[in-house]
Amino acid sequence: MKATIWHNPRCSKSRETLAILQAAPGVEVEVIDYLKTPPSREELAALYAAAGMTPREGLRKGEDGAKALKGADDDAILDAMAADPILIERPLVETPKGVRLGRPPEKVREIL
Image: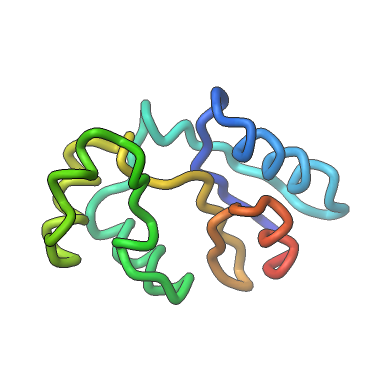
């Protein structure tokens, strides 16, 4: 099974999630450093839809740029994330069984 993780190596939750994926038997892990190679607006929308999440739920609310999005709709949030990927909560993991936000990291086990 292939698992794709949108990863930030500086994030402890992202590192923990990656370790779970790498330890899972039969899982081929593709690691994408999302700050260097961010998903497009369309990819983000599809990932959140597959995860059953709204873009607001995928927003890193502690970032300065997120404060300006307090009353924004989903389209504006997706536009902001595409323009500034630091606003994307991490890590996002996609497998053929679905998409999960690795918060807590153990959530990814649901799609392995």
